[in-house]
Amino acid sequence: MKNNLRVYRALTNMTQADLAEKTGVSRQTVICIEKEKFDPSLELAFKISRFFKVRIEDVFLFDPKEK
Image 1 (cartoon, rainbow, N blue to C red):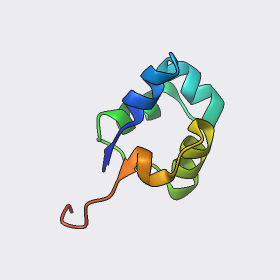
Image 2 (cartoon, rainbow, N blue to C red):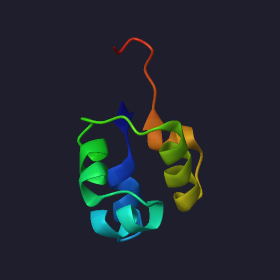
Image 3 (cartoon, one colour):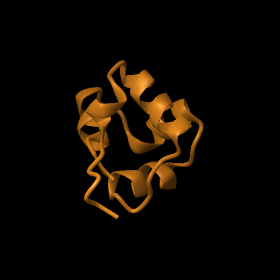
Image 4 (cartoon, one colour):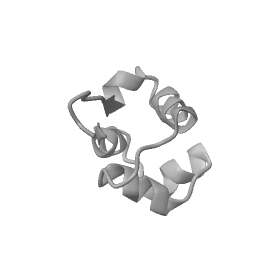
């Protein structure tokens, strides 16, 4: 799934480790999401979007043609 996670992290000067700690996942999970190698659970997607105070659709871009 395409995402803007790296952009939102950069806007807040946050490291991958910082975001991982704030959302309760490992740094490796954040890396894999950013590289689009892992799709977050719905719960994690909500945690991330709420952390940045944006809509889930602002961070994660769903394309029904993929997969």
